[in-house]
Length: 359
Ligand code: GRF
Image (tube, rainbow, N blue to C red; front, side):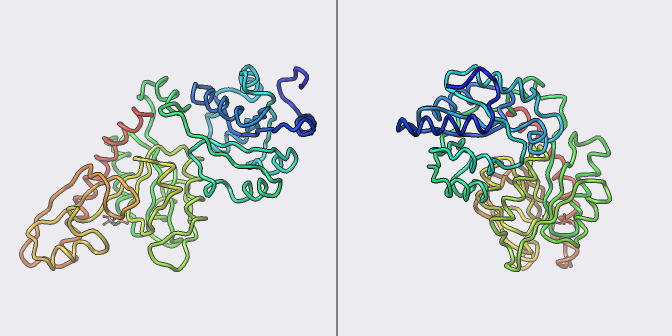
């Protein structure tokens, strides 16, 4: 159908589409980096090809892979990636695109079917890309991901899960004392990690000052007036930046907005939070005051995994402190804070090592 060139031009792909259409056949289109091919890719592409009569893969150029995945990627250059893809029975053409989004190419090629891997839902597809797909009348098909196969895992296995620093993305809304404790533990050589991104919903907090002071790329996300909530656009922007920074573990350190689908799905079991109470007791705001008012004789803090339910999720560790005679909310919170600053870096290190091992 196409000459033997490894990389087709958009025009060639358009001609391919027209000739298919005139025979009453359908062109399937998908896009991605396809850096180190594994059987997850192979099975996904075979399933995509089954949706129509020919499959075109739009391949991210080297510079766009770098922009999405950070320096150090891709491992294989675009011509090699294209050649490997063309070696698959399921792939009829590869076209390279260098823009951050594939929107333009969708408009040019006007595929009949657009396939995407199952880490997306029609709702979490990029808005512009979805609009372009609707405009050209493409049918969107989300295909299930093949369990346990990913380039990240392959890379982690190559590194033996070791010898690589854990990459943290830290989110906060307040003073930033936990961020400072994490950075302190890193400096002291107690936590083998680096903070590669700091995100806040408030442009003027100590948290961001500490991040900037430490030379950490900092991001402010527009969160709107509604306390506790973060609009979808903000959630997606966070996912994009966390991914681009190559974050292994997302660390919530006093982030006062609830994370939803896009972030939770992008980092399953890879988001941790610290809460100033011995959960499941006293979830919610000002937990130490709740403990004091209830007449508890001990309080503390909890590090837990983050899921859809606020201040719930698997507990990773807790630290207890006494409630002393004459304690005020301030003195008790200060004591809990000290416990947090010892506990959080330690648990991040331990849990992070498990994350790296799993890949
Ligand atoms: C901490 O008390 C933490 O338990 C809670 O938010 C507070 C953050 O404090 N989730 P800081 O901004 O790290 O000083």
